[in-house]
Image 1 (cartoon, helix red, strand yellow):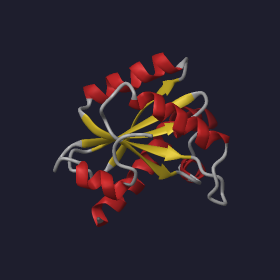
Image 2 (cartoon, helix red, strand yellow):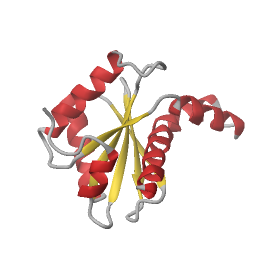
Image 3 (cartoon, one colour):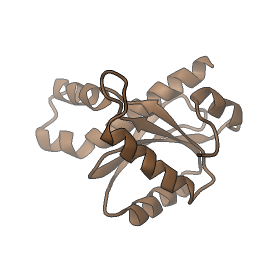
Image 4 (tube, rainbow, N blue to C red):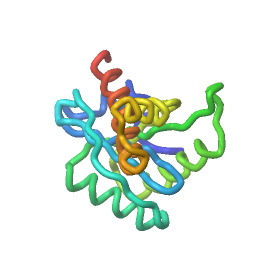
Length: 156
């Protein structure tokens, strides 16, 4: 069983008054990263980690978490359109279960259905080239996920 908050509401109770959150969009080849401001109002795309193997990915992720002094992770949960779990949900939960053994930082999941599609549509609307979209879509999807959670936190 994972320790720490299970919901955003539980996380809100455990967070300090100020502190950054990091949004994660865990893909099979990359991990998109986003960062909130310390007042947790705005999510900004940060970077993309090219996945190699779990230990290297986790080290890279935790180093960035330390560098930016984050207080929690918001992890996109890739549910199926009907809300059920699929293989990607299982992989995401497994990654976070293993990461939780390496850090005291709490994490919560946030429904990420359609986040990549929404970000891709916006990039197309901005006339971004296919190469540019491929380069930024993961971190922008992480920012989209994190912004949704920040908006919800603001209403708690």
